[in-house]
Length: 63
Image 1: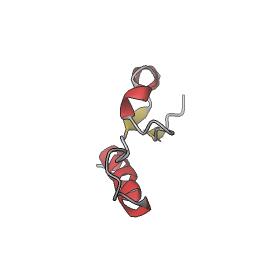
Image 2: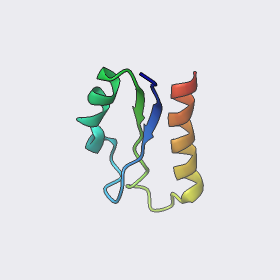
Image 3: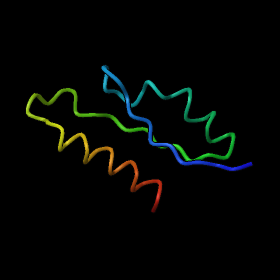
Image 4: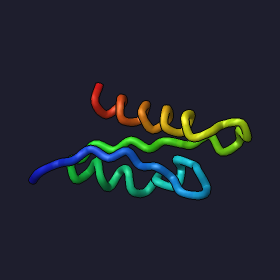
């Protein structure tokens, strides 16, 4: 089976917790999965910070 790597990005709630059931399932199938939380509580956080958080998730999978 071909495996894949996933960085799971939350929607409006911006919390990584939303993926707590999917990550173990993906890993059980042999995939790599990392979930990230976006800076929802920081009113000054913009798109650049969100991109940085997602980039960190990608880095964790490729390290």
